[in-house]
Length: 262
Ligand code: GUN
Image (cartoon, rainbow, N blue to C red; front, side, top):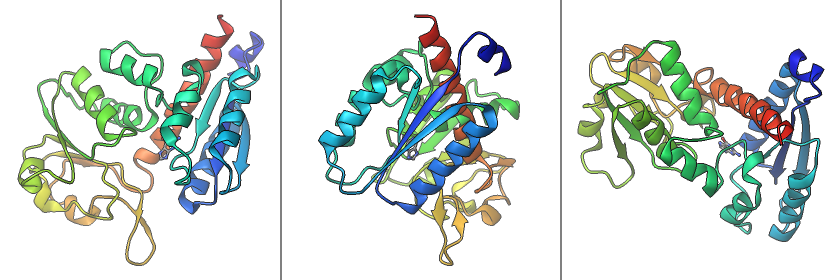
């Protein structure tokens, strides 16, 4: 960061939150803290839940042209009266540090990308750090969201894995999951995946961020049960979540460097 600043590059990230969803508030606070830690300028735009789509679009437009801001993150989900796709499409692709814009999604498909989506890229980094070879392995991704499931499958495919995407309509989910060498779970249902979904020795990545029956933070995987089968497993909290934020920081810096080169 010092080196960048010496070159006059001061990465700036705008974090936009609309409404008062408690989980989103926690995520946004964590993102701001990480910016502080890394020396990235962060600007928070906390808008009331009644904000109109036109008002939010106007803010995105302003941030698109603001020179001190290199990355724009609009925290999802947005209130129901705002069309998320309209907002994502309005963010300039060079500032789209979430990699949600169709231009960036398309680039990821092709394998020639500027940014990687934060959570899937964080998962890839975890697998890499643990020296888990993906070539020819069967990876099963449970969940098909645009934020995690779909891009995750693509990144695993780029590493030569054989990939299956499962979702709420998948038949025999347990049996399919049990064929996985690497199982990535991103469904948003507390402790849904237990040892019955896991092959002996499989690697289990839990992308969930849920609350259990006592209101305690937990993942989509029943950790204690899954531990009996998994060779590697990520906890919640403290597993994938911090990796998402680390990737966001990386993307903000990349965006600033790219924009300085123009
Ligand atoms: N909501 C849940 N995950 C994310 C994320 O990675 N980015 C944004 N913008 N919103 C989210």
